[in-house]
Each structure stands twice: as structure tokens, then as C-alpha cells.
Length: 334
Image 1: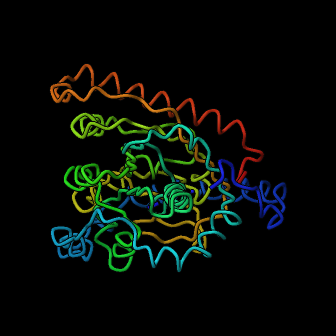
Image 2 (image 1 turned 90 degrees about the vertical axis):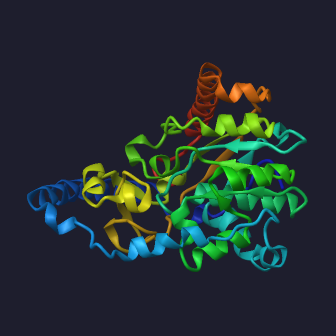
């Protein structure tokens, strides 16, 4: 979804007055939080208003998941070259991306593990993959991974496949490693991407240890990736878990969160699908030192070992996030 200097130039700061922006955004978020309470009260008064129709169009859309197509051929080279100027602008000027730590990448296929923010449009994830392409130009292929719902969406799903994204499931990830390619996984999924802005520096892998077992079975090292900035591309005011339960989103979208966001251009919105244009937050990604994994297949059934490695990865990313957060120069977009 989502490189060739180790540090990208910090261009584009002239696009806005950061001090004024901080003041304005503070006031806007305070107003938004008051509205969040009002919406929650309204929902609690009449739960019937949020029950989905039996023949929901969402269900119809996701029924196409069984027909989804994916490939480990990698990105469409012609398309990537045609879009290169646009991505140069997005990376260098709009998000002012800094991507560091390339020296930590092993010479063999690896599993990158990270966190991401921004609800459905996780621009920290997109920029990581775009920087990878810009650095390697298809000579080393990285597959992003995406939620079933995104892969099934008309238009967006096809674009994902064109840039080398594969479904976040065992079959596709195993095939990618077998082809000698790198794969980046965000284990926290929607719980991570849709976490509230107040949790922006919390590393959320969701307690999902399947990626450790996958690394064992595929015989690849794990490379943690720390990220900050994606949380400012849209402000998640509330995770609205009660609402998600009423809407039965776990059944329809495999998520227990119905994010209430403050975004552009619709302001405060319940975002069941991508409905915002990301704000120009500065994004920092750092590739961290690899964590070696025992490739003995029996280790995949050793819960103690799996849990130990899970905590090691989680702690490594959290340390990296804390370090990157300390480099931010403003409360918003810095």
C-alpha cells in the first residue's frame, strides 16, 4: 500500500503557518469532542436507527471477497513510472516524508512489521511502500498487505493490486516469501489504524501473534518499523465501539470500531469507508534492526516462544516510536 536517501529533505514548510495552525486545530478538536458526546447520547436513545438493512450494500460488496484476485508479480512497472512525479510531490512536499534505517535491512527476504494510522487511508503505510519503490525501482519487491474490505472495493482494490498489495492472509503472504519478496504487515489492522488520536504514540499490534508463526514457517527475519505522523492525517475523535457493535460491523467488516473523525472536507464524520482527504502531516518512518526468528517449524506451536518474540517486536517498535515522537517540532503536522 503503501525509497533514495536515508533522510528526505524537509521541504514544503512554507505551505502553512504552524503556530496559527496549532491554535486553530486545538479549538476545532475541543468543539468536535463536545459533538462526539451528543452523538453518543443520540445513539443510546434509539438503537433502532443504526441497525443495518438485511440486504446491506456493504454485505454485497464484501461477498466479492471470494472472487478477489491477487498476484505476487509485484507492482505494475509502467504504472509506477507514470505516477512517479505525483508520488515525488506527495512524499517530498505534501507529507515531507523522512525514511531512515535502510542499512538495517537484511540481504534476504524479510517480514517488515509496523503500525499505521489514518483509518482507511493509512498514508504512513502508503508512503513507506512508495519510498521503497523509489529506492529500489522494482529490483527488490515489497508487498504491502491490506484488509479484505479494501481489496474488494471497486477501483481502489484494483489500484492496490497494481502497486503490489496482497491480501493480509496466510496464502498470499506465504506465496510472496516463496517468491523471494519482502512483505510488510501491520498486525494491529483496524484496531491500530483506527485508534483514537489520544493513543497516537501507542504501539497497537492487537495481541495478534500470527505474524510470528508466519515468520517461523516462511523462515524469514522480522524487521520492525517505527512510524509517527499518520495520526495527524485525520483526527480520530472516538473509536465508537458501542456503535460498531450496534451496526454489527464485526460481522460485515471484521472490525469492532466505527471511527468518528474530524477530517477534510466533511468535518466530523462516522467513517465506515474512506471519506476524507488526508491532512498534510509530516510522516517519519524508521526501519529498525532485525529480529532473528528460529525457523524450526516446531517453534510455531511453542506459545511461550511466540509470545516472547511478539513482546520483543512490540517493545522494539514502541522504543522507536518514542524516539521519533521526540523529534516532532509541533503538536500538529510537525
